[in-house]
Image (cartoon, rainbow, N blue to C red; front, side, top):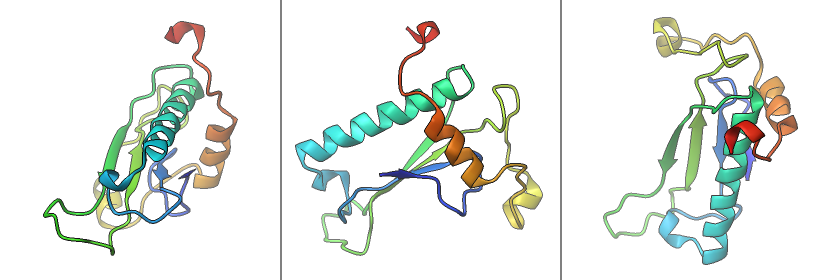
Length: 128
């Protein structure tokens, strides 16, 4: 599943979470791997279509350590951190105050989630 967390620091930040509890990508079934690939593809297209440009983002994967021991306490999840704020020309950079205190936003996670949901999952002609 994809969601915008209520604690989102970055505009258009998204979390990807598996439906069932799993600690690692290695635990995914073939169907789950295909569903994840499709979700990333669809999310990437929505990002690209949001402002009509190829949308840059950073993606982080959090999964269990690779020490071959079981780690049932870990829950696999992905973070997407796009640096665009309100448009293709307004970028978001974390600054000193935000790193040490509270993030500064001029839009809410709920507003960004609604805009991302409304964005198309189809390739635009300029992206082909």
